[in-house]
Structure formats: structure tokens, C-alpha cells
Image (cartoon, rainbow, N blue to C red):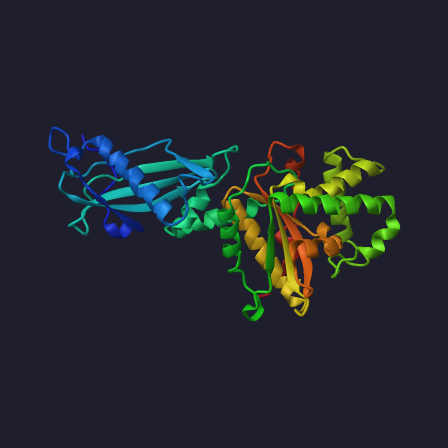
Length: 380
């Protein structure tokens, strides 16, 4: 009996990427057709070959692996040696921690008829040395073969899931991933394409040395508040005089976080220790420092915001989290020489980057947002 819901064969134009596969004499079974297990090896060859080819997977030293958790195969016509085979690939669905590929096998000599199968090829991905993270969307985005609906869903999810994390795992972040995020963020808009950003990446010994220097200075300031005169930000991040509703939101944020951590209003030691967590990058293995040429105008800070947001949203696609940090700005006289910045550069902010320790209490803190209707005026 033939089911009315059985998938119908589709043309090559329904698929976005293609890879060629050569059949072998050993691929045939005793009936002269390609053995079922061979089809499944072709699915893996097609998908993984595409990811490797496009730089989205490093099977030897990369941070993620792919695991097939479910497959389904529909056969329309047999293949056999010595047929040439073309695998058509597309992304059918992106979840928070998985991606479903659909692969169709076409005979190399025909352009339209599907001859083989239309399988569902899920792939659940996670870091090799860390708890699972939502890395699958990043892998599929690298292919450039997503249906626009899935792209929109992935972007929405990346923006909505971004939050400032304040405790990270020691899991290393591959240099290639950091470089990719910075290259991706370089597409951020800027006035007349000035691209005013400059980024410094701190890992290992350089990161640890800066942490030690700034934490020492932070402790010295607490012991002698008069030293504050020597630690000034080069631009006003916050207003000189706070007014409502901004001061209300600031207080809500501060006491919401401290309340969650059991830090009371008079707990100065605990407050100091928690504030100093900034200067340890919240234990993230990667610290970023961003500078701006002093010759640039205030508008470049607008450009910078878009650049920084691009890094943070891009990081979510790789299962990473961030915490942008203006707290570093007062220690620019320590930071700028340490990173080798020129005399013409001023510090814009720092940022922690890594895999968040999502089991930590501090990372359950989610800041509220004003409803869009409260800040939007519609003019018809």
C-alpha cells in the first residue's frame, strides 16, 4: 500500500550545495544495487565534507563534534556502480543544540530526477571538552545554504539569548573562532565606512598578567580612595547627574544582582570582591580590549556599539557568551601600555568571552527590559 504522505521526489534546484561522490565496485550488494549502509556513509561524507570545506568543522582540533541522533531514508530509484553520484544538501531545521540536514542523491548524468533518497540527517553538536552548547546553528550558518526562515530564526535566537554572563568555564576558545567572530563583526556599519575599531585579544600569560596588575590597583584604590584622581576615564560613559528613570533602572540592576548573590547594602568587602570579578574577566579564558583613535568624533562610539553587538551576537551562534565591561575604562593607564596600544588610542571598553558556566547562580540573573511600546512613537 502506498502512503499518500510519502515525500515526493524533488529536483536539484531544491537543494543549495552539492558534492560529487564516486561509486565503487564494493558498494553493490548481491542484487547489483548500492547497499543500504553505503547510502548512509554517503550522507556523512556529503555533510561533513561540506562543513570541512567551508571551514565550519575541524575534525582534528576543532571545538565541536557532530553526532547523528536520527536518520530517515526514502528511496525512489536504485543506484549502482559505476554510476556517478551528486549529493544535494540543504538545512531543513535549526534548533538550540541541533541541526537537521536533508541530503538527496542524484545520478551524475541527470539534472532533474531524484534517484536515491531524501533523508533527514540530524547532527547534534557540542564542544569536545565542555558541556553541550548550542553550536549547531553556527556550523550551518557557515555553509551559507540556509533557507531565509531558518536564518531569521537563528538571528532572533542569538539576539534574545545574549546576556552578560558573570562566570565562565576555563574551557579554551579556539583562536580560529575568535578570529572568525572579529571578521564577522567587521561587517558592522560605520559612518562613511571609517571602521574605527581596534581590538586586542588577551589569552594565557598576557591575560593573567593584566588581571594581576588591575586587581592590585583596584585593591590599592580601596585602601586609599585619594588615588582615584590618577584613574580617570577618557570619556563619560555614565551621566554626571543621574535622573529618573535611568537611576531607577541602574539601582534595580545593581540590587537585583547583589540580592541574588546575598550581598547586602553594607557588605563592602563582598561588594569589592564582586566588582573585582570584572577585572578577572569573570574567569573567562579570553579577554578583549577595544580602543579608538582619539582623533575620531563621538559618532564613532555609535559605530563601536554596533561592532561590539555583532561580536556578542556572533558569539551566541558558536555557543559562547560574553560580558561587555566598561569597568576597565578607569584603569586605561595600566591597560593601554600592557596591550601595546599607541599614544593616540583611548580605551572604549573590555569584554569577557568564553563558555558560560550556566550552572552558576550568578548567571541566572536576567535583566528586565522596558516594553517596546514604552519607548516607541508611531507616526503615520
